[in-house]
Amino acid sequence: MKIYVNKEISNHSIDNVTGIVLSGNNFIPPHLGLVISGNYFSCSANSVKTNVLFSRVFNKLKRRNHKLLIAELDIPISIQKSREIFNDYGVLCDDKTCLGPVKKTIEFHLNQNFKSNFIFELLPVLEEKRIIKSYLQFNLDAYISNNCFNLPSYTKEEVLGCIRELQILNVR
Image 1 (cartoon, rainbow, N blue to C red):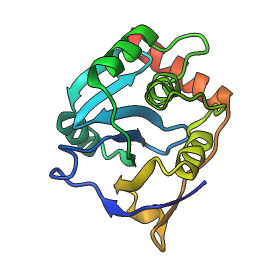
Image 2: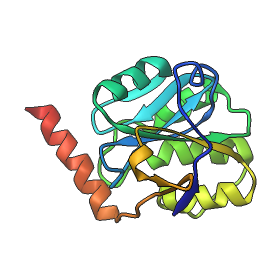
Image 3: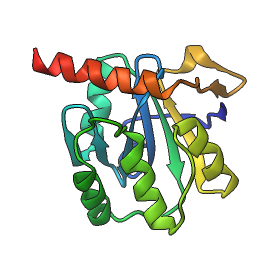
């Protein structure tokens, strides 16, 4: 999927941003979370994060030299309802992926259901509905040409394999 990147993320720009967060080493697959007015929400293989200051998450990702892309959303999202959705979704296991609570939160606030199973399927739908305001990036300069970034595709097996690997690493 080709994404037009509008600007680079800065410490100043993350304080009030609301959007879908894609992060990771190579984006195959990316980890997905949601930032709402500078507060981060995420379900991972080991924990559920709700209402964490995104500036803390951003600084941690910078230290780890991770790549970061934010699809800035042009819809109001309730922090309270998002906390409820993410907590109810819980830690990732079986067939649950990090897309689930992000997608459920957006679907709830738009009162719509989307048939997308991957972020590279959901983003074009949100773009078509003019819900994505812009894309912000950090540490993707080497992958951007003419302000465009190609988001790689991946399989469900790659996502579940990544989750299993993280669960094993957490046990050690």
